[in-house]
Length: 520
Image (cartoon, rainbow, N blue to C red):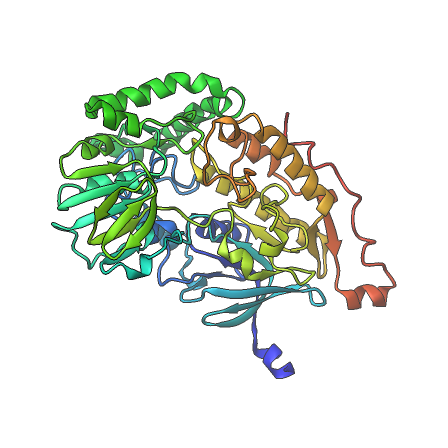
């Protein structure tokens, strides 16, 4: 065993995932002068959700210049809302520009990561081997593991079945009877993209979505030339897009009733394409706009109005061979089923593979709901940080802003460990985590996500919103600017502490109120 331990690779930081969060973490580590790190990626290329989601019509619903790193502006975005292929190419460009290739370990899905309290390090088992790390940064993201509902009889379906995030490009949909299950962000892009070539398309709609027009256009050559010649114009464009969304936050978080005028815009968008009153009724939500994510499309409603499309206003409940049966009894024949049913967000699979200081997995710790100090640190999981952790999601802006804020926090976390000297680890105090979570949940009570009258993927099994941040991105940037050591217990190796005659808790700063910076 001793010989095995000697040859096992050890790194200062192990990053899990190579999407925006993982690549952003890698860039930030290099900029902090840290090169002793690896990025563990289960696939064979970078890109995360923008690698996995290659379905027809896949694009971002956040403007291009806001959906990119502030430290890596892209003057060459071809459209105001970029497609999947352009975003994936951007991430490849970031990888090369910042010299990240040597740190990437493809085919290295993390099978297990366990905290070694004696050595103050993480023992990590991957598909390509084992290693240890002082710090683990989990950047797997909430949109990485597809969720397919348990439908009775699905295994008897004789045709093709796949999730939107695992699109089968070898299967030709031309002339086929295709069933699309779900009406989320993926489904409203898939439907208009495939409708012209399928024989018949049946949309199983459990809950209608609010859909706003998508103000997309090509970015002219003159605009791109200006951004190349004067980089400050790219920053100004990004700043304007950011500012507009910051001004909208109050309506989502404090005054949901102000969103009524937005509903009228959405209804006009529907009425312009859907002339059948009965179909309009089926497509009109009965909850406040914003309660679920507001979707953007100018082609979705026109596609639903085409004669080869049927909208079933009920969820899929059973499969009988090639016959699909909805909860309301409606039946439809299909050759292929495409699930646009989302991802494991509040029950992230990576949580089942991470074992903390007390021997419990993160999933077990979060059984009553996800919670982490400043969306990053879970109690009992020393030197473990989550990028896009609990209550860091957004309902109206760019997640890249939140990621960069958490990268600031990660950088200061590592600085604090360095300043402490010797071998040290930081473990979020349970009281600090509870205090932070309580304040966030108190603020969540008046938001549209909790009061809008819908059931969404923002909510966990107990109905608690553990996904969205109830404030502005600027506020989150402030509360993650620095690590407050009073919110953490400082851990030292047990052997070293005993030799020095020091209690393991002696280095810990007194507890602090994590509410202080959360805002009212």
